Length: 158
Image (cartoon, rainbow, N blue to C red; front, side, top):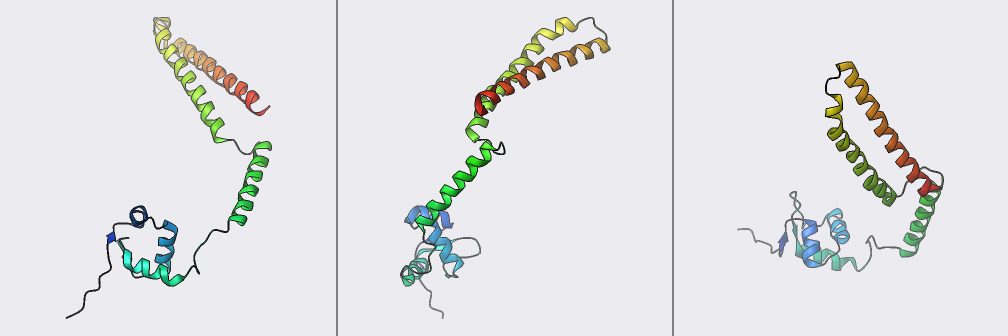
């Protein structure tokens, strides 16, 4: 008869264990990476093996944060991004969102306007004349969208 070992409470995932216990997920991941037997193939976790491993570590071997280096790296990345923006190779996400918020409604407004106004105008025209008229209207919409983007580009980057 084999003796059953009490592994303590179990959790369906590492994220759940971190949420319930307050143990940082990085420590739980490090425990799994270190081969702690408190994990199974289904990603379930048992608390006691993780705690035993944690207290055996005595602070060594953890992916502890080196905040000074992290701060230096973050500042370097910020400066690289600023340089990329100045060189026109990177666009700030908030600007993209604002362009999208302005341009898409304007485009759909123009399309709805054409859907309302064009049917009576096109009535009685031949297929070739209808195609020519639609191409003209689409060209006007395209021009308005281009002008809106150019205006926004000038306001944003110049």
